[in-house]
Image (tube, rainbow, N blue to C red; front, side, top):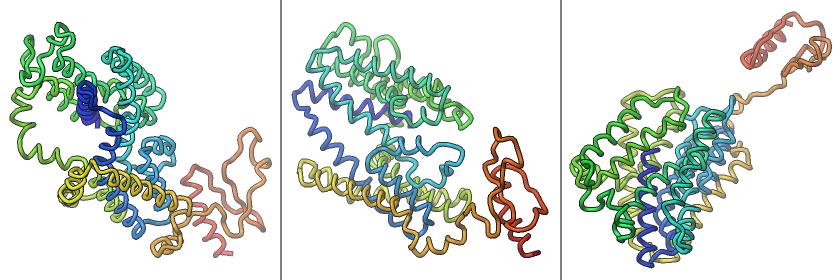
Length: 421
């Protein structure tokens, strides 16, 4: 997502700065366009996930999904994931809306970014300094945080904002050149149609950026503390590719290819659809998917993304200036968030058909005919046991000592012991 953060920061910042330069920018208009851009596909995917979960998920799974639907509707998925992280956290493969963490970071950034740029512009505070200052603070928090808590640093907005700000800084340089401010400094980067600086070849810049991106894709994995310093690789690569301009060979031939452009048009609904499909299949199969199944899921995701773009997003964009449409979309997503919260509060609706079938798998710390031990007789009071049971009557004839695996096995052993008696 680091590359897309840079691209997003570049595009949105350029739109905001150009709008302010032409006197056309308003905060209401900006957020109205964001609602019309984000909410249609998001509402559909949240609804589809909610309905699918109703049919296939056990009560505890559906309860957790409800929480993530509510968090996704509020653009707080990343915060919810931070609070869930820990030893007993569910696997990422079992969270259908895990991918919404990046949308949460992006929208949290845009909640403050336009207002910050607008305030700097109106007060004649150098916009470049504002952007660079935010990026530097965020980079510092990223580098410090990854050493202490890599999970929180991965999902936290303040440790990710610098990636969007890097794209924003690049947009600021381009807009300065376009509007003719400080042309002596802006001329260091030939922008727009020229695409190649007077000092460096645009092709060389684009090639270097592409190599950095490829290197990051090949080397960064779950064993690397991320984002941290490793995030500089894809971010720098994306910045270089954009800075090379439209006339660089990679940008003109490869990235401007019709197929690539088409995928760009459906990229947002494709992003929304792919992970829930993969996750529900993993849950149903109870393990990793085969290469063929994954390929079919990707194909289905592309088809659903095209349908969403063609029959939903296109129509919404044509009518995006209608206030009632913006309000309706906002209410729809809020309603989905409310339904998710309702599922969470009601413990995943345990009376659903699939939930009733799962009750045999419910775990209980209580074991029939067993009572808690008097731990003071077993060990020093300074080292309490977390879990200890003994028979209600008679003496124990076996002892099992261990961690959570031993705790899980005591149920079966107790059942066999009772049958023998």
